[in-house]
Length: 250
Image (cartoon, rainbow, N blue to C red):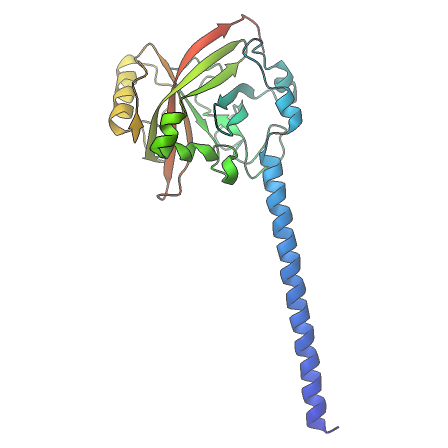
């Protein structure tokens, strides 16, 4: 064998080794990606253990959930969707962006109430946040309300707090910017500002139906990211009607 042939054979061996290493890296990365995706959605989904503690309208107590995390302030269900989660109330609006009810890191985070809101939902306007996750996880199904047929066929939900249960009547779907001062200023204690917000929702909603809302009402909004525009947010708005007050404490 000539020196040139030996050189070519050596180069071929190096090339074969490089290709083998590249294929191994691709396979390892693919396996990791599958595992990571599974882990993300496994942690995003509410575990069977937590679902076991879901409060009932006939017994609206959060004591078992609050024993796990004292920041639990409610349980939210939107009928006909995957939205069926405990609601957390942190010291700021970043605390539960990527943290689950156990305090563990989770890409999907938790559903959480704006830190400026009262955790007993006595504000005129309460605002909830959740990530837009694939498969309808967290607030992934909120985006579906931008379809008129979905909005028309999904009208109700329930919010259960400590000792109280509220019927939710979904009456508006909106697409706004993340810096919208009307929709992202929770609380709204004075009556003129309350009427301004109600009028803004009616005039700017993608879809709207009359729910009899006025300044004596309480309203709840669910906000999530929208991929349609940069910094876009999809929001659904519901009127809260108290169904039960047991006088109990969570």
